[in-house]
Structures are given as C-alpha cells and as structure tokens.
Image (cartoon, one colour):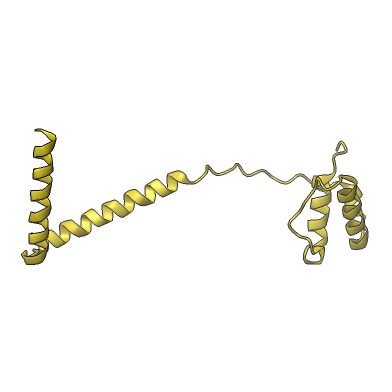
Length: 119
C-alpha cells in the first residue's frame, strides 16, 4: 500500500470510529473487553513505573559505637561535633541543624560516622 492509500484507510477508520462512538451500542462483552484491556494497561504501566525505580541498596548493619563516644555527655557530644565540622572547613553537612531533636545515641552515631581515626 502506498502512503496515500494508508492515509485514506486511516481517515476511513477514524470516521467509522467516530460514527460508532456517536451512534453505536456497546454490549456487555464490549464492556468486559474494555475493562480487561484497561486492567492490562494499568498493570503494564505499573510494571514500567516499578522498572524506573532504583535497585534497593543492600542493608548494612551499623557498626558498634566506639567507647570514646559512649562516655561523653550530651553537651560534650555537641561540642565535639561542632569542633569536628569546623575542622573540616565546611566539608561536612548534616540535615539536623537543630541538634536538640537528636537523641544522645544519634549524636554518638553521627560522631562515630565522622570519625576517621582507626577503630
């Protein structure tokens, strides 16, 4: 078929679909087929969306907190954290600017994470 013939066939099928939509009657079989097709399309779209998600990162067990952090009080933990971040010249940023919302153990874990000395 030539390109012109395809255009004519496309227009004829389009006009037939419009006429059927305006004047046609759907049967229960048509409704069932339509619902099944919609369900298949939704399932395929969901699958494609899931494929766009990044792979789950492996879960790593947290290392035990070093003893030198366990003996510090809350004020000492905050002072040490401030000292560490200032010594790194802004290379360290953390989301909790208000450290009052973190538990003492959270502060210890953060310090342990930032501590580069050997274990």
